[in-house]
Length: 345
Ligand SMILES: *Cc1c(COP(=O)(O)O)cnc(C)c1O
Image (tube, rainbow, N blue to C red; front, top):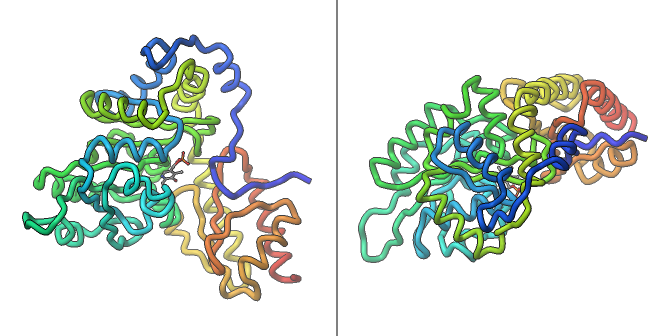
């Protein structure tokens, strides 16, 4: 039985061409700056994002943490959306390692309202910590992969600059955002001082993320990366996958987006399921099963038995993520399986 794995776009396997590039990569010790493949990936990433420099990191979590450590001082506060990945899913690294306190605020579809940020920015007062950073996320994972609009990003960046506060963009899926917004990624990245994005998600590389920003910022982040144990040696073998991902895997993201819409349309044919297609911006579909006869903890094992792997969010909602290793036929087969289970138990 073929498994259809909707748990995450991180489950994608490298393509044969990607593996071939990895084997052929020219290598060196990257702690000495000698790995030409890593250097190429960092330069290429910076230029694609319209920034001065880049730093290859093992994970998105480390990239975000390095950004926080490099923009702030311990004891400061960072404003972020209350369901952001940094706040919910990064083990509190910003507090424990960066020594930065979170100021979470409620967003609307992942977007932060400008008045809420204005209210959250600390004024000068002997009792208060300083606001050291604003973090945004695009596309927004918990908002079902919705893209934050350029207007919202522009407003936030303008306010931040007025207050001398840097902005970090968690752009784990920034290429999905660019696909939905139909703009070059530079147009998104320009509203942030630093951007982290992942090769290991929709771009199908086995490992790796990138942090970009000014040369000065990246120099700081590089030292912090060494401290965290992220100084890697002949890591061009992984950077080669990243180069391939940037050149060959970005343009196919529209297939994942079309498959997500197809999945939502097919699931809408089931009694009790109602997904707003307008809200499917990218490759994530959050499906509310609470008006079907089953809870998600009843459904997930039934799905698994039929080879369908999914990620339950809570008792009502299951997250489906489309990616390179899921075809249109897989989506149709998956929705048939779900239909049958919901109708017949
Ligand atoms: C996956 C993800 C990350 C972290 O990436 P890892 O490589 O898994 O550490 C950060 N932000 C968002 C929005 C993500 O989806």
